[in-house]
Length: 349
Ligand code: ADP
Image 1 (spheres, rainbow, N blue to C red):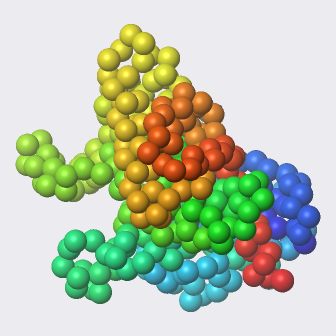
Image 2 (image 1 turned 180 degrees about the horizontal axis):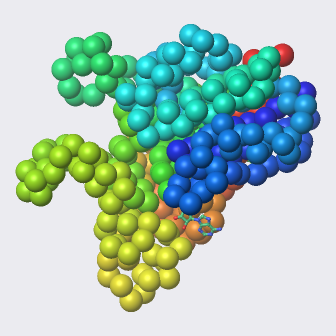
Image 3 (image 1 turned 45 degrees about the vertical axis):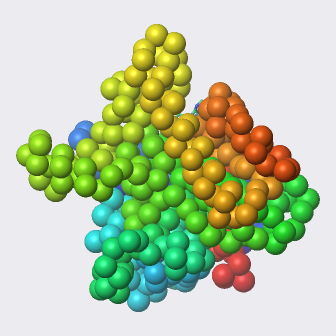
């Protein structure tokens, strides 16, 4: 069965084609700069048309969808009801869900009759206990507006946690694992017996670790304080927290860890950005060891987690000292597309 995995972002469509159940990757690629000035590709429909000229005989499509809110605990077959629910959750995921939806609608038009499946970044974290996902806000906001921690990068955390168990040759049901997804967006998850029990991102992907351009955790009172000081409106403060903060905001030069590493010898703020990045990860690891009641494995993945050995070394230094048994440290390249293909296949079988 040929499964096309689609990850459509605001200006790009990335794809991979798998032959399942053998998990053979047949082809992959990306269309970028969709609807950007000067680009010939005006929308996702046009982008997908180009992809489908290269790919034939698709049996099933698996879509990455960022926000499934509370509606989706696992992957689902896409139908009109599912599309409407994703449409309705655009309000809480304005950056991602509209692009994911465009990809789905384009596929429906270009591949009529081909089954489609949605796999949600939030689904793996639907196992969080209530005391971990309810914020210290009036409870009625949860009931009225769905305000709670959702968590993201779920497909990646799930993939690397299960891969860790496989590599350790232990049943996942016997393991306490902490997974660190450190890319441009960064999140960390406590996985107990194969289930996510806490994760650092929240209602949106802004909470938690310091990221490339996102602030992560801050005192919530700062939002209104900065708005008043700088006379900002809602969308400007949103942009500052999401696009001008994190490594980029602290260092003043870049969100890219490679650049910061090079500059960290001579430039104080580049070094400070790295120190803050590492310190926040360490704090979360400590907290998650406490909530898990121990740790068997610490897993690093994504751009920084897979490639920046110096960050892994800094994060891990000292962690084994206060534990009876040192955790295994694993570097596992993430493969969200394969995970989506597996889940789509399982659902369609
Ligand atoms: P995204 O979250 O956008 O998918 P990535 O997972 O590629 O991003 O992570 C981007 C970060 O990873 C950057 O800070 C970059 O410096 C780092 N990174 C990515 N690839 C490499 C590499 N081959 N060597 C060193 N650092 C890398």
